[in-house]
Length: 167
Image (cartoon, rainbow, N blue to C red):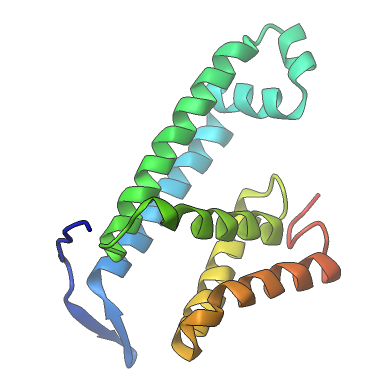
């Protein structure tokens, strides 16, 4: 269907664990992008406006924030992050198609629920936790990965409905 290009396929052994270089590069890039987004949202006036608009749009508008402009910037930022995520994903899986998205969308929803709504650090930790569970399940039986993700989400909602760092 689509031609694939394999790159950064070298294997590296770290503490006896076999890792592919493209996965390491994708993980490092994802961490860098996450940290930059965190700094943007926590340390700039634009980040403050985005957070204020997300929490209380009417109050943000009352204090002079143009919420339509913030919505536009937020949408543009989300498109940028989606493009970056797709690029990083294409480094690992070279046979992507339009039907690949829903699986990763559900995994992202699970990560947000595990971390707690509105908790950046919780979502980052939830992402690492879900990645570990997903990778471990792939080693055991790849057909059960989404079942395990669903089960993990349900167990997490029962044990801790607000997430790891939920408010």
